[in-house]
Length: 236
Image (tube, rainbow, N blue to C red):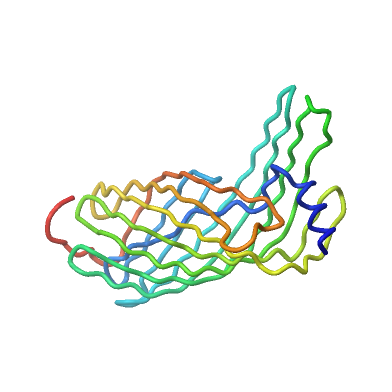
């Protein structure tokens, strides 16, 4: 197995097969609230959330990335898809909130990199993976702006991996990632908002055998409806 890992590390250099999706932190205000948003960053991202009771809610996310660029010196191709769902608890006070969500998702990743000026062949890597996550969050929900700090923990488990045209059944232990992010929302009114976030994806234990993307930025727009947001004290 050590030989297998060495081969993968050499063959997949600079070819990330795990590209984390952005965080889905709904920052609910009350029962019945529904949220939908679309963001660009680490690909195209769609998110949904529903507060099914005063303190419990569900979330779902889908991300898609496809990029194909080349010049005389390099080739850079990426294709990644990922979908997940989760369930959690939230508590909202006058101007602050906290929440805990956990869930499961599945994804596929393919990357192809080559540096022509070095005379190298293409570095290709592909894989299918499962991911379990635990996502606490806390922050402010003022009238004009919401802010959330989200220290997500993700357990990434590749079930199949391919490189150099050879497919392997992976029997390595899952890799644990610490994926903190900060999310901001600027509220246009009670229904529409602009959202942005930045975050990291950092392996907790040993370096995983697969390449991954470390940093991300995203921004987009969203809508909330169903249920009437509370009127917190003060502005922000």
